[in-house]
Amino acid sequence: SAVISQKPSRDICQRGTSLTIQCQVDSQVTMMFWYRQQPGQSLTLIATANQGSEATYESGFVIDKFPISRPNLTFSTLTVSNMSPEDSSIYLCSGYVQSEKLFFGSGTQLSVL
Amino acid sequence: KQEVTQIPAALSVPEGENLVLNCSFTDSAIYNLQWFRQDPGKGLTSLLLIQSSQREQTSGRLNASLDKSSGRSTLYIAASQPGDSATYLCAVMSSGSARQLTFGSGTQLTVLP
Image (tube, rainbow over all chains, first blue to last red; front, side, top):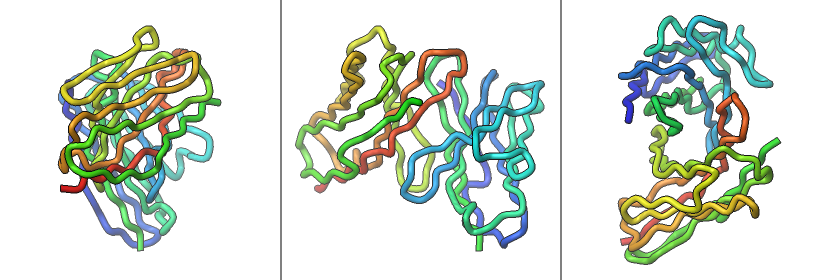
């Protein structure tokens, strides 16, 4: 199994500001994924982050709005830029660790006023 | 494009009852299927992973089955307890190298004491 530590666990932010979410894994992970879960909805994949290359974004998500860093195999960050109330969601990082089970961080509950 | 549906969206049962949660998917070319549990405002915990070549997996009071040809999976919970109250999501990994999951919208389970 693996432990993915995600922080912050929650934040309340003002419109127009940016928030960076961090995920630290206790094992090396080749591929990490960032998901968004809007209230009452299921998970939507934002992007796939590979170490040493640019993240691959899903349709509807762009790098300027959700820049991702992946400096090594155990760490990644997602920034939500120029936030608006529509960005209020739970953001989740995840990754595979030597298996095909997907492990998740505990999530970041973001509220934008 | 893979679509995953979970029925019912919500379920309330008395403690001790056995119950079945359903998951259906449109494209039978899957690599595996995974069931997750999500507590309110939290990340996801992997419960069971079924490979496409398998028919079922068991862990404690949980049993998950897979019928790939009909595009269906069920999660059976025996002798339910109030601590089982959570949202249960199934996710399908389609065949291919992307290793991305398509999530269902979840079943919100409440077990009444």
